[in-house]
Length: 511
Image 1 (cartoon, helix red, strand yellow):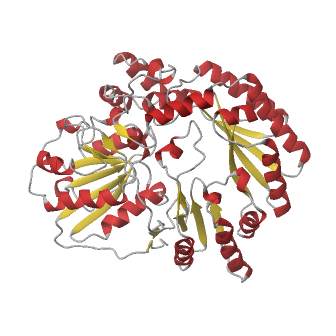
Image 2 (cartoon, rainbow, N blue to C red):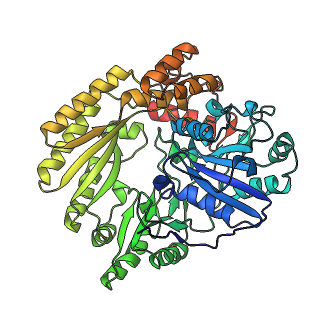
Image 3 (cartoon, rainbow, N blue to C red):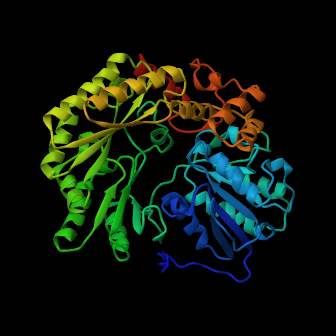
């Protein structure tokens, strides 16, 4: 028996709307229903007067509206390889991939999300416009302009949209675009609770946005500055709203435990459990140096057995280079606190191939794992590693990757040594991370290359052959160290704290 989705807002369904639109998620519906940002944007538009919105996903079988009935299609763009699924969705509905090949009968198509907010140029051939940065407010303005000017041509509407801060239009003369940063005045939460979601019947709420740690490689940190916290009262009120409909709560934020009243938030939930309320609570991530008995007590009481901690590098030297000021005694103290609280294990996240990394840094990671394993015999630890990918608007955007073979050798060595210790380990594919780096530092010459990759199946071989066919020097984008005075493709995106600060920070970190 199919369980009905629970809508935590009043849907507006208009018999004669001024605008119909699709919000498209480049993945299956189960993922869309667990994507907080996507769902919140959908809700905001779904509450508008005289607008009907439908979400579509990669596995959508049938739709309420035909293409000819739409005025607007918005795509969420979260991961570098999302373009493959976006292309497949466009083709599924008979829409030409390049915006210049679409006539007036095709709706305006735009994209927003972290990938295009960081560097939209590789995808500029495919979208009529982009939203750069936090889109909560500008999305409404965009929809209103499209609604109020539905009888005008696409070029006329685009001209009106170009006046909005945070909107970039590739077909218009080049200009700077300022990344939008929203002042958070409300707690964002899951507006649709669904049994079909990847995180079934889970109520997700955003407690913090941004991260003050500013690790040198971390796009999420720099893209979401400044660090902003939701008011304690709003968080509690939102938790209570969620608990009216489900027992599963997930707290979201890159720096959750830095919230000035996070202990108090946990205490509120713990008291409810003590009173007999069954609650399953999960958290997106915790700072190693901010783990307290109060936080862990709540996590254990709400069914958490393991949590994830990002330590990034094994040696204190390399952690300082990446701006992760975390000493080994703090890591050991976090494990001690977790063991005392009754937690069963930690999954540590790290990165290999970071600028200035040496063999000694990798050996330090293995030595740290060994010390934890020997001291806390019943405590389960595992490790997940990715390889360094240079990201725009970070202090490490000028640094190329090590060669794939060097990174694969490091991964093999790590796996072998961790397995000797009986420690589970996973490492991302260095070959795929290479192409992620190419896309991250790409430019507006990529259009035909990306189409060719898609046409040939989107696998590793397709990337390689398409790069050769279209003369894309992929090593230049992925492996090259760039001089600080180089003009970068994404410099036209105005993101605070700005390029000069990033140069100084990069020099300070790497020395």
